[in-house]
Structures are given as structure tokens and as C-alpha cells.
Image (cartoon, rainbow, N blue to C red; front, side, top):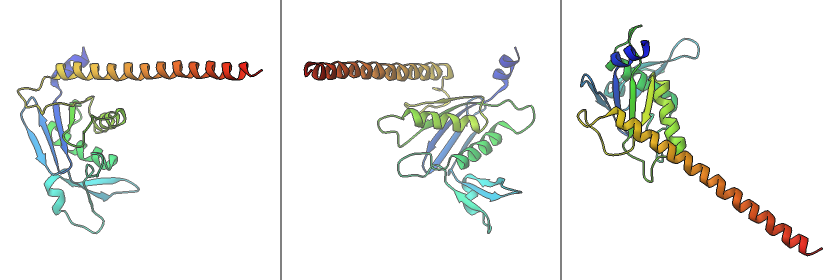
Length: 199
């Protein structure tokens, strides 16, 4: 019962990531964060790192100990710095959803908008999902396909598609293992024939 109430009250966020841009849309309210994916980090007490600014403001923050990072800028992948990306998303989620003790965690759909040639690997899918969960989402989906708008966004369809892709990936992995075992048995039989025939 409590989960159903929380689901109705919580925000649904659609996160689109490019190397030089991040766009997060609150599907229900229409609020949008659309800026450069920069995060200015500064050391706090002990080993703690705090966020001085995010987005376009981060580029203009200055200070001796402040480091400005683009966690999505890498030649091969959209994740360069997992910890910085997590802090950036946390900050954006709080900005769009509010930051009170009673603010429900959002449902988040993340879509990488580039560097997806050939589709995302299972490792990339898991990394993006864990990134979103670590940033405070209560449920996270990684979406691949045409860019969505508030009007074409359908969470249940995205969830069903994601479940189908996960099932297909699992079945594909299972079939690969089965073929490997068949080939292994054939190889063992061939060795037994070769060495058994020589005696």
C-alpha cells in the first residue's frame, strides 16, 4: 500500500546524455534541466568531496582546490568518471524533485544519446543502471531507441521493452553456453577416438 502511494507521488525523470550535454526532463511537471554535463568538485572534511556547482555554472566556478569534471567525456564510452557522474545526477535530481526528508526517490529512464554504435554491451547497461540507482533513483531503466518527448514517453512500454531485451540477452547467453558444451563434448570424443585408436 505504501509503495503504491509513493509511486503516485514520486517523480518520473527522463535522462538523456551526450558527451557535452545532459538533459533531464520531469515527465509529470515538465521541468527541464538542459545544460553542459559539468560538475565542480571541492574537497570537504576528511576524504569527502562536495559539489560546488553543476551544469553551466560549474564552468565559471574558480578556486585553488576546485576541480571541474565532465564525467561523460571519453573517446570510447559515455562514462569516464562514475563517482563524478553520480554526484552530478544526484544534484540534478534534487533540483528537479526537491530535497526534503519526505521527497520520494524518482523513477528514472536513462538514454545514452551517442557512442552507442552496435548497441550497448551488458556491462555498459549495468554501469548506467547502477549509476542512476546510486544517484538516488528507486527504479532505473536504460533505454535505447528513438528520442522521446513528454508526450511519447510511456514508462510501462519502456519497462516491457527493457524486460524483453534483458530476457533475450539472457537467452542468448544461455544458447552460447549450450553450443560451447556441445563443441567441448565433440572435441573430447574426437580426442578419445584419436588416442584410443592409437592403442
